[in-house]
Amino acid sequence: MLGTVHPKRSEHIKEGMRPPGRGDCRRDFGAVFLHIGAMQHPSVSRRGFLHAVLLGTAAGAVSLRVSAADEPPKLDVKDPAAVALGYVERASEVDGKKYPTYVKGSNCENCLQLQGKAGNDYRPCTLFPGKLVAISGWCSGWTAEM
Image 1 (spheres, rainbow, N blue to C red):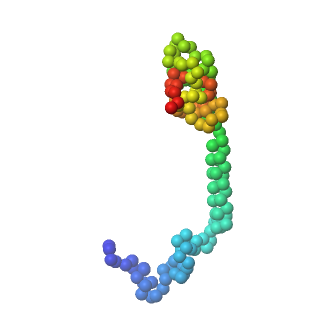
Image 2: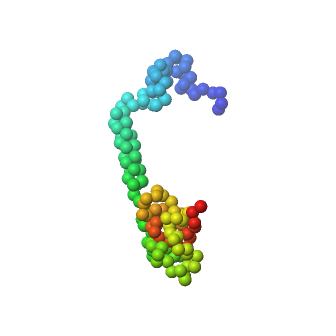
């Protein structure tokens, strides 16, 4: 019920005693907030806990750096998405009769869909997510850069 005091707590208040397990009320607020006072008989010391947290953080940072260094795989010309768009690794191999929209001189390097940093021979393409395409390649999704 609202407004009632727990019987055991009211006994401590009447007697002027502090509740059991609460420790000294004059402790530092930070220690109370972080529950450091509860670590009187810890199974893991604060030093051990901080060591584990720091190691975990460092391991997470290293794994992120390693995964960022891993490049996506190169697009295989036999990949179903590549076949559907007529992707070839060398634009000079495009069959002009099969793809009449092919314009001589067009390739992945001058396509709007190509992403990534210039200077790499293989770069990401918005048409083939998670794969790298050859900058000298071509597909029917080629769009002129603006």
